[in-house]
Image 1: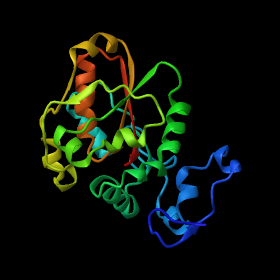
Image 2 (image 1 turned 120 degrees about the vertical axis):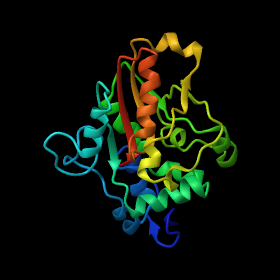
Image 3 (image 1 turned 180 degrees about the horizontal axis):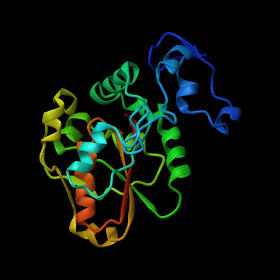
Image 4 (image 1 turned 60 degrees about the vertical axis):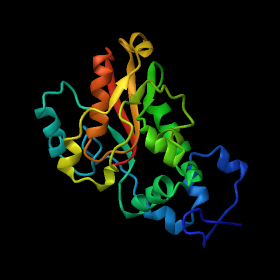
Length: 230
């Protein structure tokens, strides 16, 4: 018996061959029942434009605002879990406290979701972090969460540092300038491609739509998004 990775007190059953070939996520095996139950999976009742939980006639107000900006198509983001208190605490420990090992809780589940929903012909492109974040944190949390799939790191951050997004109000997030660019050697291979942007959290959508803009400018034909939380 071992400790739950999050609460460190409760126990969970050890790995078995039956689990390895099951459809359970890593979090089922690595967390106690109480911690596991605190995460809320997102099911059918979501906004089709961004994955926000709820019942909507067309799109949620966030997506309607994005359409009003003149974009031709939404990202149709799909998130696996609601961004609730448990998920917030998870990211505080994973991203900001630097507990990189916690990436294993969801990476198998995320990889399975991508492979089932987006089969052949799609490129999985992670959202990058700034040079300052990479130096301070020593990892990109998005690449950690999605390390079980082949990632095409064609987008880079052209700014060296930025204010922590979780500290910004909604208006300030939406007003952030374009932080991304694509290297010249990647421009040609992206023309006509189909891309799935992958990120950790969808909040306002500003970061993902910035990434979408540089991909569209490079000639990408279709762009979708998948995040762990919404």
